[in-house]
Length: 492
Image: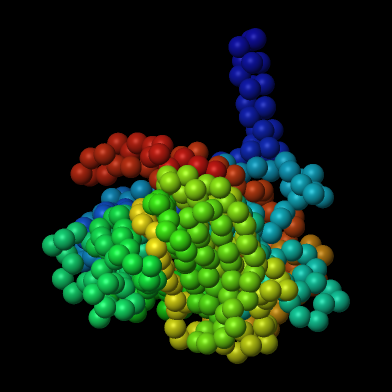
């Protein structure tokens, strides 16, 4: 009898824990990819070695079994289209996550915050759960403009951009090109290095060496300045810096203005005036971060073309004098330009220096990507792990989007939230919902629920940990699944 009581007590405690504290869920779809993966398959790009997680395209052959793979998979790093020829692929299951319930139950400062990844009941089917990123809070007017989320509070005339938290932004950088994953030698036909000299006709442009290797070096022969530009040539080269998702087998077709450049930089002995400069040209301005071997960083800008240079900030960075590898990052994201060294943000623009023109952006259609440049003069350099990333780009369509698109803000009531998927081109979310389930029909008629919102009482909690990533099959028939423990991680 005591054993039975102990088992019943343990079961009751488990049910209480699940109901009020932490509950486990499985990600069913790719709407949050690549942050969180639903049922998917994985392959290694045969050209560059990039790992591609992609979703089913033609449906499941049988429940729990293999699905017929798409006819081709698109590598987001080298843009190679990999033909699969109707190959049967044994998929991995979706990521299994833990959801924290109790903080949201307390409310107040423990309640939902913008950029949280939340689990909530499907507005059209209460037996299902959705997972999305929360972008709109009660009382706000939400508007998606040029890929960014804009927010207007009561009493404000124009919306302002909603900048992501540092933790969320780390999850929302997607690869554009990684110099560590170059196409194999035998696959480079029709390709050139992604970073190329601006003045190719000048013999001295050879000061840049190793552009087709993982380590790029600058070996100056004089004090002149020599420049590289990010200009890939090859299959689908025009699509670089678009909103490409390997999970979706292609691109959404939108040029993304928010990008970053990162690399481990080793400075040699600087001559007088030796420097390295990184540039991001976007929205009619050129932003430059100039690094000097003596340990000074200057952030400046000037109009595209000719114009007066404006100093935006400067800082002393002793790490630049170490003559060892220094991790350098320059980004343009959410109308803020920043420079970070060894993970610490050293300089950033202010709203007074750089802010969006909302009226112009509502009419804007981008037809070209931002331009990226690296220049150096008078100092030997070594660039390792050079990489370009782009930010999430929230899409909208006048044909499919029901609400919150440019020029048509959507105002949330006191208990309503607005959510979007990280895989924006392939996410059914607040932008497009068009029906309410039986559990919300009465509230819909009483006007206490509106389609396109997540009501506060429908939120289950905040996703916080992937405890069991997609399982790996270990035999040819897809049986004997094992955990992919290397991808266990916190959700940001």
